[in-house]
Image (cartoon, rainbow, N blue to C red; front, side):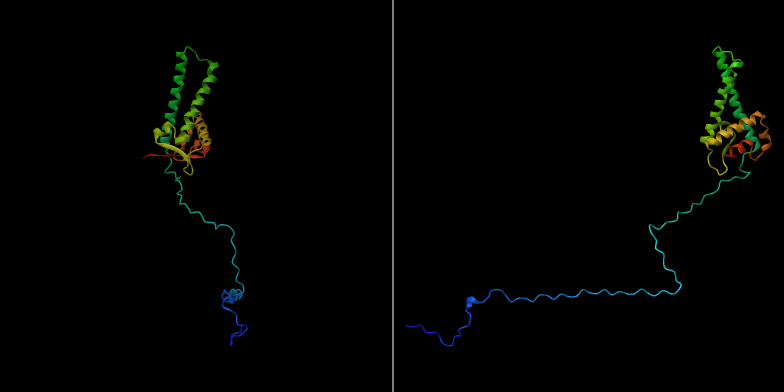
Length: 207
């Protein structure tokens, strides 16, 4: 017997298993044009107004100003004649005591000093005098005799003496001793020959 087709069924209708499983295709997003940056024109400058200068590197910072008080250099602060003479006499007494002790030591060792030994003895005394004068002046600004008399030597600006200045003060002291201390008698509160040679001044350190 021949198979008859069902009536009212279209021939092109798809079956259930023939339907696609994937969902509907989504439309691709449209590319949006990039946002334009608004450029604000600079404000117009007045005619004749200079352009600001460009600085390169760090901005320099001014150093703080220090209030430095100048050292007093008046004649009222300088040592008087009496103190200078007392300090010179005390230092000369120490030098004389060292000379006498040196001669006594030579006698005790059985050595009789003569004219041939005078240069060596003079070099020894000069070496002692230089060390006795220059080193205390460089470190403390005063010799033992000056410390006893209450005076000290400093620069004109109040700074400690350099070794060059102490050496020149020693030479000035020898020159003063060679003329029997006459420059000290006429100095008063002014700068002495020793002060002028060394570029320093002698001040009173106590009342």
